[in-house]
Amino acid sequence: MNEILKAIRERRSIRKFKPDPVPRELIKEIAEAGTYAASGRCMQSPIIIAVTDKALRDELSKVNCEIGGWDSGFDPFYGAPAVLIVLADKSRPTYLYDGSLVMGEMMLAAHSLGLGSCWIHRAREEFETEKYKQLLSSLGIVGEYEGIGHCAIGYYDAPAPAAAPRKENRIFFI
Image (cartoon, rainbow, N blue to C red; front, side, top):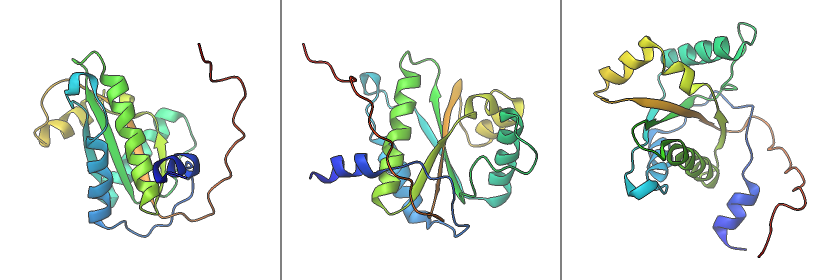
């Protein structure tokens, strides 16, 4: 079977990660894979923020937990030591689709490198706050960006779950 098709069929969302740090080089490869995602008119407007600083990662986890309405202490990043945040330029009519493709590319890249990943939502709500708008500004990011998602990255701390059976009647030919 083709390697890409095999990766697509085997990749799963991982919800239990080891605390072991992911080498910067692997994070860079995953993020770079995201930059190759298709985008409307090839504008390449989505950006990726790689968070490996434990203090910031834990702060984001806490804020994400509050937004999600979970009990204090729950980690919506499931212990992943690295989080790649995808944001997209709201001025682009295809920003949501473009950012979603970046997320998908990064999850496949992580899988191909032997790492687990999971798409975690609530980046939109986080980056609507003044605090995280200031974080973007401190990084030199100018413009109106919407958080698309967090790609939690790390080494598996449990076997990957089995694939759910594929639902019938989802492909139609004309």
